[in-house]
Length: 296
Length: 282
Image (cartoon, rainbow over all chains, first blue to last red; front, top):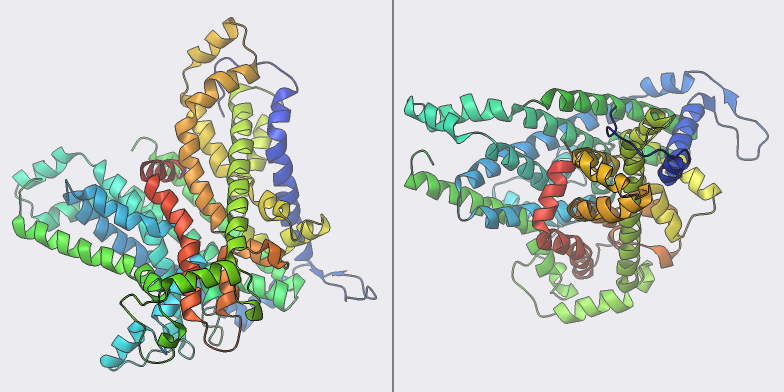
């Protein structure tokens, strides 16, 4: 890793400058993470201190991976993140392509499309929960008109749709901005050349624009999956609370529930360790991509 | 444009206007709902046109709250959110600009090691290690305090990276000239590097403020004292506060007030926001 060609020489100053960041990282990141690793291989003692914690090796993980509830949570997380990513990215791409055609109105449309980024996931959840409310919500009313009885309190599918819509809605702005930046960096001459060769509008998009957008698309895919897996706690907690019947109990929510509500520390720690593993894999994937993209 | 297609443009505008309508709709509904009396929500479908009770509702939530359901007046919660967001933002900005300065402008043993320690924080969002982090904060006696709300969240790999990238593009000559003129590292930092970084700082400020304001799980766990409730977590208490249907008109007035500050920040600093977002992430 490079520094400047010439550097200041001072033996203590750099450590002093790094100290606040490093101390906070050690206390609030590295220490808890190692605690999670440790707890994940122990069976917790009882509350009265009569039975001390015992070392159980990978037992917690074995229990976890044979637990139908956990496997269900994995499945639910998968459906939720894929659904959120697909919905939010495709809508954002559509908006970006349309806005990119505009000249005068580009900025005004952008303004209208970026602000949902500012809304907290929990608030996004509450907003859509209101709209989808079975008693007074407008969408169930409309759906009833076409003969669909919406109830996310009893139907797992409805609950899943609700949280996907809420989570995706908030993420549209983010994807939109990146797609728009990507579209604007595509040289116009390429598209004009294709047009002269007689390529239709659709062909130009599919064979030129879309491939050139693929690095951004890939980047956004990773970011969106990370978002859906880890940043949507608020959406779930403020709306379905994992229900009905575990249908929306995604991994992050389950860690919280098992740790704080059911007080099963060993299992919660093992879940934390698995989640950390997932985050590390996703981050590495993302960084490899950034390295490759440098000369794009 | 390659060819000017009148119908194509018309179609594009149509799609965008519909799209904007869908994107705006949830917030529109919330604002409308916050202007109605409670009776509107007892039956039928929710209203789509403004009602007469706006002033009354907002006055109730800001100054009175719903004491029976355990939610304090939200005036205080707004203030808490503001303090927390500012503490997180300023904390993140200052510790990461300092560490980026150390990493770029000094050569010292352990540099790579520290870089990786900081990098780790990027990989571990608070949600995945929530139980042990909570224990650490509880052991330090930081529950129910602004320190507990903000300090655990201010380590930031992202900001450190952005500043590092930016410092690498600052011309070498500036530093050489400063050294020739006898300026020490801190003087160089204060008088040359800091003024050059203003745009980056502002762009990051927008992103970090929104991040801080929207914190949810963390305040939910470590505040049990109403005095430290933040607005975003307070809404959840209002929604699930009782067995009955929530008092929608008050919930939506709170939602509107909770979402307003970060939205205003984005709208007023849109250019910086876009710059901050697209540059931090790549």
